[in-house]
Image (cartoon, rainbow, N blue to C red; front, side, top):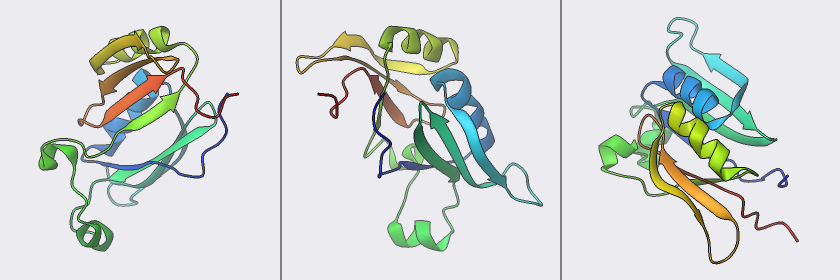
Length: 141
C-alpha cells in the first residue's frame, strides 16, 4: 500500500452530499468526517473521505466565499473542463473500474497497461472531476 500523502486533494461540489455518496459507492471511499451546516444539511462545510489510508477533502461549492473568490476557484462545469486530475494508487484496476462503472462513473479511459509500468483507467465523477486509478506506485521500490 502507498505511503500516506502530505498533499491532500480538496474538491468543491455543487451537490456535495450526492458527491460523497458517489465517491463512496463508485470509487470505494469511506466517510471519515462530514461537517454539514446546522441549518442546511445539504451544505457541507468540510468532509474527509478515506480509501486505503488515502484522504481526499471536499466541501460544497461556494463561489461567493472569500477564499474561492480570491483564489478564483471554478467548478469544472463552469470552467468548461478540468485544470487538474487526481491519481489514486490501488491494486486491482480492472475490478475497481467495473465497480466505478456500476456505480455510475463515466469511464473516459478503459483500463490499459502503461509503458512506464502499472495499469490505469480514468473516469469522471458526478460533477465532471477527472480521476485516474492505477497500480503504478511511484514510491514502490
